Length: 607
Image (cartoon, rainbow, N blue to C red; front, side, top):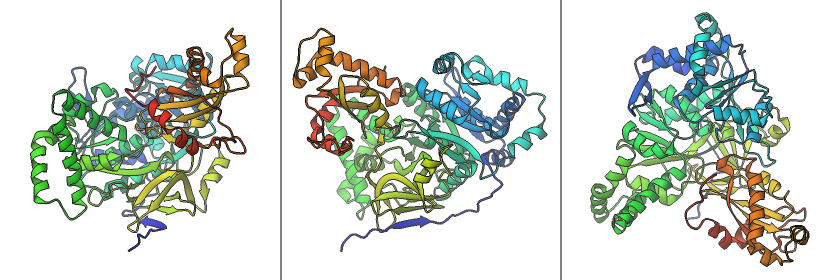
């Protein structure tokens, strides 16, 4: 019987939307219901986790919010926040909302150009900075004259000082500010990569966050519940982490923070989460490190057999159940291998939320086979993270699930995924043209390609737009980097690669017209394209071009390795269109070996 596909699928809301609500109401509800609930747990200088009750967190939020009001913050003001994931990040975020203002996250790895654009475009007149080094970056971005009224440095004690300065603000004034926003009001502007080079600001409302969090809780109340524990290690500037932050407060999940991935294993072991949020690269690291550790200990063969058994066991669950022999092998490896892997993640983890990139069927089956159910989903900044997700009780590994309650998915005639629902943003900040392009008949055009099966499960098949998503879930627009590289006289064409890979790299070609002139100007003999592509002096110069391009992006987006092709990319060769645009899929096909070579061996260190 031929496979059938659904053109559209929707899941109705399972709860009532309260128009007057905003994000802060979720915290107040926890304070009223569970004032002593450990809403957060914070690691102290000795490495011990200290619980912070919902009542205590609310008091800290209120005090800091009063300080913001005393400093002159008005309702609707945009306040930027540039810091690594930490308890302070969440505290500041909620304090901004309590003061009636709008949070504008900035990745702490952002370049000066990115920081300058976000502050100018959003109109943020105030900014929280984690450390003095970020103040130096701010000063550099604006050549010594940043357009900010206040730049508060967290490490310098700014939060305590702000809290003290707000002592005269009354509870009545704070409540007036806190309750001034409703579901439709702006909560945050999150900037996402754009193919034109300038990030676009996505306007996410209080309703987007509140309702998508409640929607997720409604489909998995046994996972997202009071008493559950989750350790946040993704950047809170990322929409997926931000959504989980609101979900944790709404559900009463105890949330911890860690920003240094070198400490992740020990922090997982001491915090002992019941579910984790991660991008596919984290799951890959867990698998790869376990495999290498087994190899080093002479147990590589056992690990590979255990991995194959876990995958086979998971696949069998979808095909009538495992037989007796497989059950016995699985039980054996559970004692020998799987228990140890679960212990690495704290010993209590039963579920994980994966997003920001494709996980892959093999890893999905491997982790389910060892006892960790990975709920893989799909979404964008514009959809407040998840628009679809695999349910713990009904998942199809290899797909990204079905729509969350209150969401709809449709596949356009050209295969593009269209979305509608409670999580979809309202518009791009000060960019009506981009907003008009993104919405057609009320449907948001995601730019991604996919199919829906007969049960309404979404499978991603490709990208209509040329945004690269690394294995770590970082969205990277190749065009700005390519344009910057082509500024150099030696560079003919540049093709940035890295989709699904560990880091960003590039294929470069030399400009055959400019090459002789550059060689002559630098006192070098004439070289053919092929010879020049292998010349170390040329590579040194191209490295300068790469270094210059990297100045415009964050470290995670920077080009860390490049290959020089010994030919010219042209319309005649089939690699350029009539308007001289790169045919990216043709280049990837024709130079697949060169791309693979870029990723052979260990990844180069980040600068």
